Image (cartoon, rainbow, N blue to C red; front, side, top):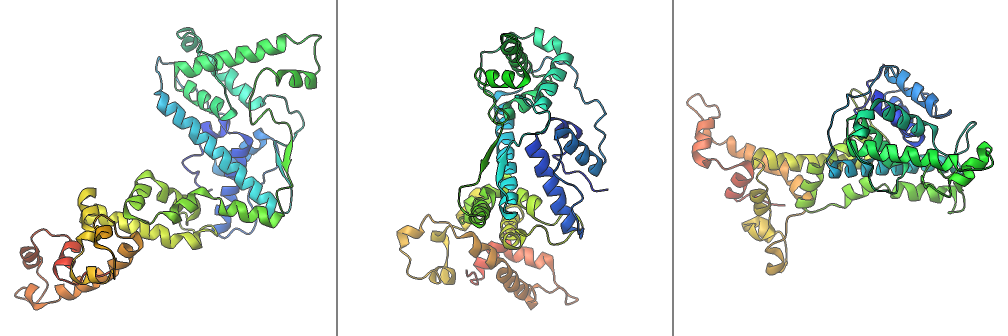
Length: 395
């Protein structure tokens, strides 16, 4: 049985939307194929609860285990809550993009929110989540006055539900107010409406963006081949990774977790080899980014000021500077080396240092390499500084 990724838990499955569930299923199928499976272990057909059951069975998770948190009088940092909402919104857009790309590759129209038997004007899973949280967190609601009205999307509601389960009183109040709005809007409809009439009237009073769209498709934006190519080219994470060139951009990407996320999304997982198809064009760039960051941490002890100062073109010496060609001196004074040149210089530096270490000047009485003699000669310089001192530095 495969191990569930860190973002797939009992709680995340229970609160996830159909688009997110389908994206998780696609990722599981891609990982299975990378491990040698010939057929997809999971299908995307069925309603939300059916998709949840498929994912839970596949990863061995028990959705019947209660996950309700204790009621505590806590308040989530607004920035953390906003960040959670933005993260869910981006995940939703990525899931839609993956689904659109799949449809384009299969020469099928891309349909937003296809009508399912029993569908209602408000996503029933969100309604269930709201009611479940409110029924178990009454103490938190009573302790907090209702917040001012705010616009809300399905992603925002999901973030409120997650925060409310952790005891966030603002999120509880928002959900309570939203539930009151839903109930009030339905109770004012007269005469007693049919199910479809209730949906039509309710949409005029409350906007729930992604789930209030009953049916829409994108079928006139060019050929299916054009759509697939466009969606592939618009992968923002891959494009951002490949466009970064300067050392400061590369270090920032690694520290933000962008490089690790690319490896996680597209690279080999566990004992599987090969990764996703995109990995062939990404692995060299990812490996270079990681090697450069190791130089910062291992050779410069994480000192970014020293690291960037060393690799400023105006500080290059001798052969390394002459090889830059006819560059204006003023332009070179504060310009950082290109990240590719630094990454490609690492094996040349190591070769030159290995030759230097083989010199008789660093041999002990038994004829072996003496680290003490090496340290006495170079007095704490790192491998890049030694390479420069030897006059062999070149890019």
